[in-house]
Image (cartoon, rainbow, N blue to C red; front, top):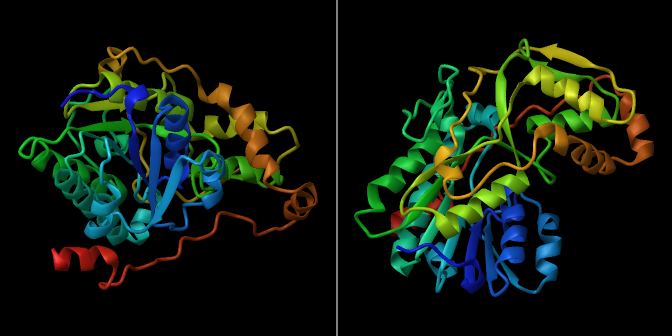
Length: 356
């Protein structure tokens, strides 16, 4: 399959388009694909927010479809005449994956398999699958290229690795072009506060201690949302058929350093850092080799330090000043415990598989 010219694309489908990453993808493609209309498919779990699409919907070029990516009939209908699918739907919170691993298998692995089948039925020319660098596991500290072994060490990573294996098992046999992006930790606005950076920023904004798991020395690579969207476009236009690309910024930071950077970025006095018990298997993540993506002309333009002032202002603005003062004196404020949510056997995914 040939790569696509952004200016000539007419119909794009973005799964998970009301979520953090998906909504930014929608905005970016609307800006760079002037002739395109975008269909958003989203099941509106707790991590999605319709307000993320306010600007996109105001263009009149976006239609919204509510439903599960595992519903084969629905997905097949949404993909009609699509020229590009960007698959950003799925569960993404590592800690939550230990509580409800079955949801991650359903959404990330089996949901992807259903989407790929629908893509084959509709002869969609190109799909970009938003994977995760979590599939590599802890590594040994050296930069990892795309040919490194997949050694997931948590249920989220395992479900993302399974999705990639399911893609690999069918794309060549059925003549599909599915390109995979494996990003490191993406940072930007609209992210759910269960994630590290928005959690730190919101706690700091109300003067509460930043809760750090374990000793805080676990290292992470961070990627600005703008750099991720630029990588996505580079792969659409210049990428090779059925190829996988790492996407990461040039720096890694340990969690304690990130906490200190947040405290410096938030303009009000804060209460410092509070160490809490570590989550299961919380390991450092290896740096990623991005030479393959760089051959397409992509380079990261931003850093975590450069992004933080704007992010601190955005997340801080979500908390009214009066409420901020109130919350500062609430002694038990902390990230809420994750509640297990099970998916019944009568869900749309199982119905789709049974009817198929």
